Figure 1 (cartoon, rainbow, N blue to C red):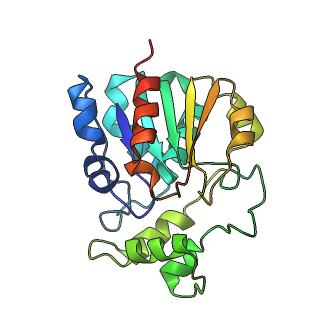
Figure 2: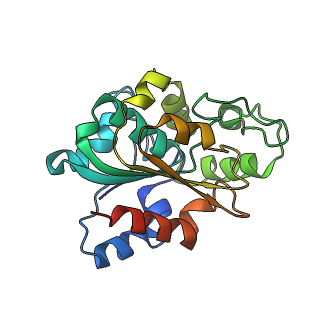
Length: 222
């Protein structure tokens, strides 16, 4: 079971602290994952290989089940679009239409200015931006490294990319998540189901028992 954490966070913060690692181990799953490049200091070789680095701890175990939150979910979608044979089932938390370019952001629920938060130019006072401010201001955070992660060359997920992700995929997104909704993303994935968590925002998703229960039920299907 490969677990991929979100931007500015860590494997311990998203998965171990919220109980995922222990629960999966109790189910007999071998849990693998690591802190993403740039999240434990600068990466000497740069950040272009971030996706492959995220997958490297599971490289000898294919096909694997995988769960990713936020940027971790986007990483899994990119990896699956490039080579779906690496995976059996995918669970994508906190990824929706706006962050995949399938819809314009809702003015009432704007995307946080993450880069502005890193370089000190952000002025937004919305709750999501405040959480990112805390993440990038944590003692372990390296703002320069995190900025390098965001500035790395990236390929957007196109409709053709999404059509190649034939793995059974569960999308889990909060009703109040700035990345949502995820209806268009679910429609474009060949084998996707969608769970919407009521009264849940982006950062509450990894700690949601409803999200965990939905993910585990989906992963345990044969």
